[in-house]
Amino acid sequence: MNTDISRTRWFIGIALLGAVLVFGLSGVVSNAREGDQPRYEQNALYIEECGACHLAYPPPLLPTKTWQGIMASLEDHFGDNAEMDEETTAHLDSYHERLVLQKGAPTLMSQMLRDLPDDPPLRVTEFPSFLRAHEVIAQQLDIEEFAEGFLSPCADCHREAADGIFDKDRLHPGYGPQAWSEN
Amino acid sequence: MPRQTSWIKNLTADAAFSAIAAIVVLLLLPPPSAVASDTASAMLEEFKLIAAAPFSLQAGNATWTRVLNGRSCTSCHTESVLAQGSHEKTGKVIEPMAPSVNPQRLTDRKKINKWFLRNCKWTFGRECTAQEKGNILFWLSRQ
Image: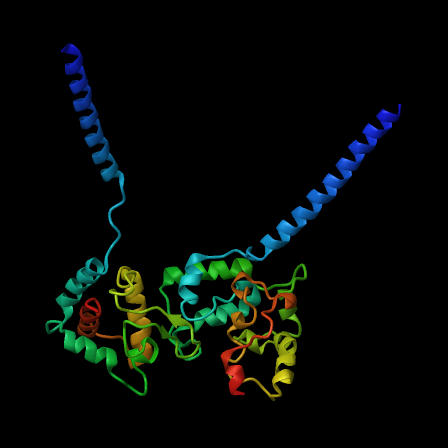
């Protein structure tokens, strides 16, 4: 009788401990893996065409109108020529369209829609909610406003920007663009 | 004696089999990837049909370093094509242009044409002529 109880106890004990261990370890593993997973569909042609000169900004950062405006003015892309042939343009248009910033389930990026005018700016760095989210940097640096392009290289601080990861708790600590020291 | 003959026979058969296998494997291997000179030579031949004068290393170097309204190829690619450059505005690193240090350069026709178009327009405010492109490509392919 006693041995029976003891056996059952052992069994339950091992099962419970094992389950806790497996649960915990799988959590640790999946958490570690998450950092490597892009949060949106990546596209090699997009990275080649747009990522050659700057971060290939994740399409879910900008709404349809902004992407259309950018793609229609590539011959004068903020002072640079970034024109591409029709085939490439069509491919990237449909890629953008699949992933654009739009109303739906709230995500970190969907905050970018807040207070966005009907005719949104072409630069994400001019979006109202973007400016609000980065106000603290101006305060820390004690400057009135950012110089043009100051906040454009997202990946200087958001190291996983190319993967669409902009979470505050994953910011590169104690680091800013090189331009910071000049201000 | 008969034993030895069969041993030799086997050896000959093995050798023949190995040779055939080697040939088949070689045939199945992908052709060696394009090298700078292949793509560049083919493009130079095409530019030659339109260009007025023969291409020269000197002219290529001159166009590469020419400054117009404060802009030049060297604005981003730096004074040396052997060195890394950086985008004038964004600061993004541009790998060296010289095939001798960056073998991937000048191997992709589409890429070459795309950047000739974009960068000639940015640097000189217009497309480059076949003569200019030929000169640059000729000079660059030998760096």
